[in-house]
Length: 532
Image 1 (spheres, helix red, strand yellow):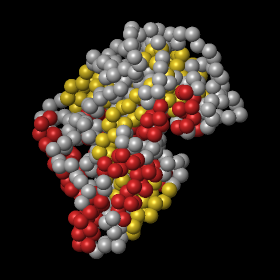
Image 2 (image 1 turned 135 degrees about the horizontal axis):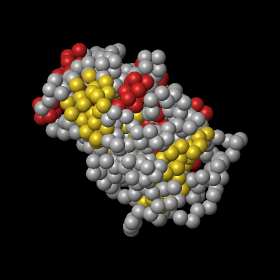
Image 3 (image 1 turned 90 degrees about the vertical axis):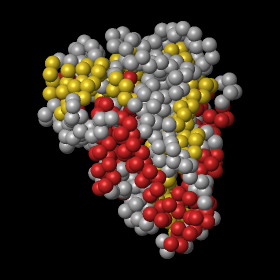
Image 4 (image 1 turned 120 degrees about the horizontal axis):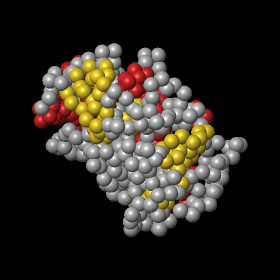
């Protein structure tokens, strides 16, 4: 590919500015697109670009993501933002990752096998090497998981690894790990695929100087809040990437990302909003890739405090919502309506429950029964996510028709997710893709660390344990269906829609997966992307 070096940032201005062009430094191109294919015979769910043809090697690709400022790190166990996850995926591997239906697919793990009681699992590693030539071993796996589980650290995957008794787990040989679990866990492969559960070399602690992973790209340079440059790993176990180099550049404002793409300063722009996509789709300047059903859009009601500690009030709020109006107005019609449950289209989703419709008369009757006819509530929202403030305004008007006054309180982008976890009573909420089992374990159990609805029910916890100890998949699905019926009737998530995750690419970019929800294996994977 013939390319012109364009400086991507200068030392006076971190990241990409809100202008038609980006100011930045280091003219190395970056990465840019989601890919398809991988282990276990996966293939493109859909590729961007007309006449993709045969993949070609070479070139550099620049990808614009919202970043985390000067505090950014390449430590894969600290990954929280989408930019963190994309960089980690380029440098490192997990034992497993999620397919398009959010079931676990093997990666560094070649196979896994449960014991008779589902409380011991044997995982066999494939032959893979780190960037320094050392083979990936069972001891590296145990070191990585024990590091994540360190009680003195706040690593993202810690809660996901909780079922593992890491003190009792052991390496049976260099390529076989026996995981001993604290309780029977039928969905244990989901643990291996957990967000942030990357495998690093034994003893690794410094990841910002020259990190060593086993991923498709090798480290070249890193300037926190500005740029990260990686080069093709010719020895990658899943085949060397097509690109020579990739660069992640920081552009926190969506307008900066789309303007950089239009101006030819990047080839990939992550997370465009629906209005932007509609304005540019089909115009010939950029390619718009929609990752369907990627993001749950909802309002979270805290069920442990008034007024939402009364299930009649929660049901009334379910019935106030006109979900089609919310999707059309807040998401520009680019998404599907929700039914107050997470994971539409994913494995175990309770698709047989009737679609809930707006019923203002029933909502008013429930509020009268609860003694809440003239209810006033504060709805916390923020421009932190596309559609949040628009949905809040639409729902305020819908609630008014049922006699409920909704006062909107707009929080800042930087602290919103931290602020709404424990404070307030009603808030705008979204979630990326994950298995339904993971959504339950992380957000709906009494001990869940990100339980935004404060759903605390011991009998519900017991049903989850029952599901996890059930070997037969059909019987396990029946337990999950029972749990979802409970949430549908009286849960705290008013799930009004599922948004497309929208990405823009330059017309020369090929191999972008269109069937991979955000957070899944083929999202933000750049090793199978090429430049025409």
